Length: 109
Image (cartoon, rainbow, N blue to C red; front, top):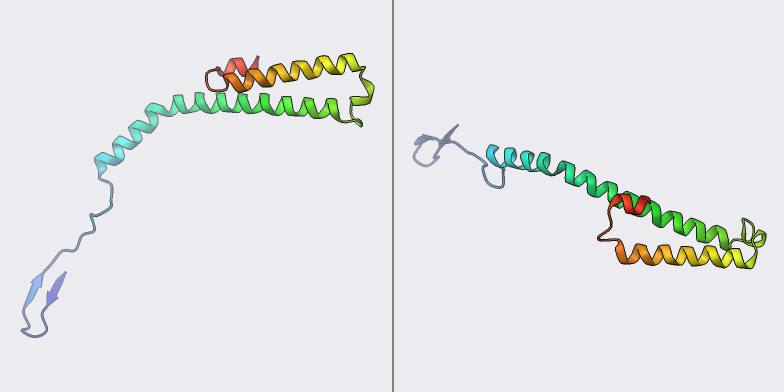
């Protein structure tokens, strides 16, 4: 590209580049390698989170089912309903105290 000074008429060849805020090829390659390196760990963490969420949802659904008169509440004896509530309380307590340290298989079990 050429630039021309209007006052003197002098012309000069110039190059305009926009290297600011751009990643270099080496930086992009490093980021891709890091993503590939941690992909398996990311999948394992995602699977663990999914298993925890499934357990949490199951406990919520069971508690709702036991308490809902239209579903099951009126069909259960008081003793059985209390046993189920106790089991749900115990499972929820375990979930809250182990949500960071438990493995995916623990949540599934």
